[in-house]
Length: 79
Image (cartoon, rainbow, N blue to C red):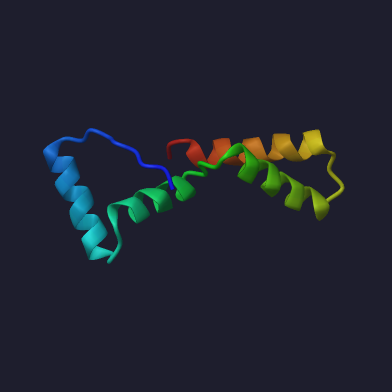
């Protein structure tokens, strides 16, 4: 697993640490779950998702990829 160093304000760090403790998780687990929530995936994960979706539909690879990208963009749009 790779390591990452980020710089946060002291108050943001304390809030993140507290949120992780309240959920009985590490800060890394909390960040990883947040990335999943926002649909942040590696290219390989995204291609696998498209492959699995395409297997159950009549869409072409380009159509399935376009649909997947639309869904990711929709999830990332502010409410």
